[in-house]
Amino acid sequence: MSVRRDERERPSRVYAPDFLTELFRNPLEPGYAAAAQRRQVDPPSRWHSRSARTVTVVVLVVLGFLLAVAYRQTMEDEPGRSQARSGLVTQVKERERETDELSARADELREEVGRQRDAALSGSAAARLRDLEAGTGLGRVRGDGVVVRLADAPGDADAVTGAGAGPPRVLYSDLQGVANALWSAGAEAISINGQRLTATSTIRSAGEAILVDFRPVTGPYEVSAIGPGSMKRRFEQSRNAALMREVAEKTGLSFGVREADDLTLPAAPEPQLRYAEPSDNPSASPSGDRSAGPGSTDSGTSPSPSGGGR
Image (cartoon, rainbow, N blue to C red; front, side):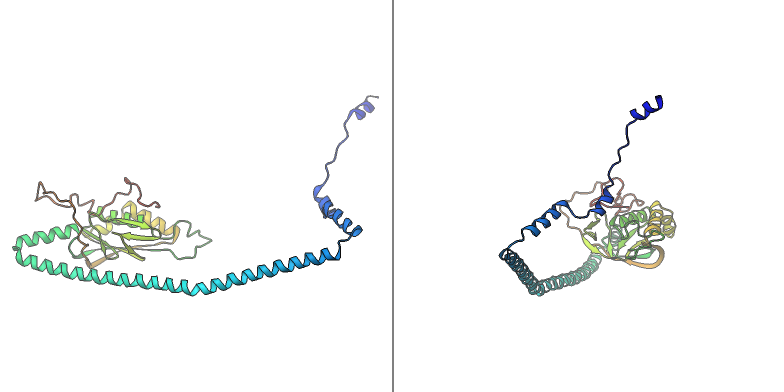
């Protein structure tokens, strides 16, 4: 009797419907089935069917006409846009050529002024002035040194090794770090793609372009430095060189260091002086600490000018 009482008290199991099986068994929505039955009982009039087809045809014709007009307008405007783009590219190239010609003319005039000045000054004063110009970057210098070459990584990333996981392009912060490491290694003069660095030089980015003293430079980037014979060894032992080697291994970016004989670094454009004060100690070195260098920019203590970095 107890077993039968337990069986009566035990609740019966409720099975939930299998929605997936029901969906395949009855794929048609009940509302559609009801509408189909109504159409069979009371079919629409012939006029209603013709009007619906007519409206559909008219809508399709209007849409086709609008698409045709838009396509024709786009094709008519394309030559104008291409011509405007070509005109802008031509103007940019002309301005770049004029800028290069004016820069070359300015260098010639600077050399002429230097010769006239040396002729007017005594030998010791002229020599001291040339030394000051070389130290501040306002004079052309020659000597042995080091060339650091950086280039963007190839466009295709290696799916097996993971090359290309980081930024595959050379960043402005990379050039900043290389320049600062070269100053610390004893560099006396540095230029990036022919742009001489001075105490007021800036290396930053504008969009995807890298600007050195507000002049764009493109890859591959060559950072040339004139300094003592130990400069290459000290630079390769620096933290920045180790970081760049690691970045090159991970992203495929090209990074190389080589010694170079008889480098010639151009003079930097003369700055526009707005304020001047007499020096308290005329015999003091204008560049201060040689290890820091006139173009050193400590990116670790100052915020990044335009974001981004390794």
